[in-house]
Image (cartoon, rainbow, N blue to C red; front, top):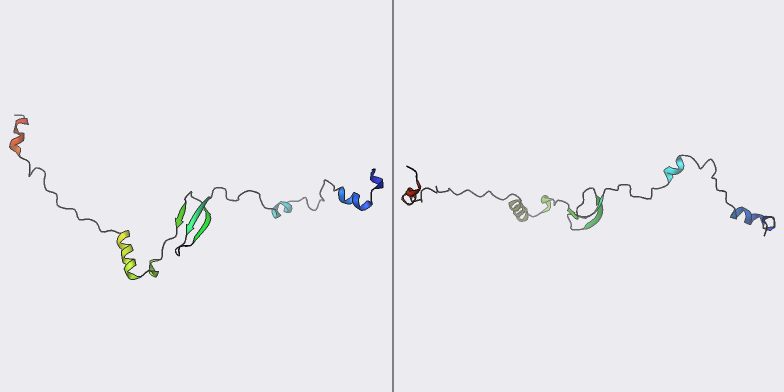
Length: 116
């Protein structure tokens, strides 16, 4: 049917102009919208384990699987705190006095190899 025979309201709703008003075509229009990509593209999924044992999925700058938060040693009992310190800073083993290898060596056995 020709456009002249259609109701006036239908013509206005169907025919939306392709140009936008001048008030919408400025720089502020872009600032309102959100980018359809990740803002921080170089971050990796990570499982964060808190000190109470709860876990949270976050994004982190380094590619790791699990990150554990350090435990506050002030909240631990005294015995467990000392046990953790012993595991963290083990005592250095005392070096045994090494015996000289030539003390046990029989020189008479190797005299034939010496040059005169």
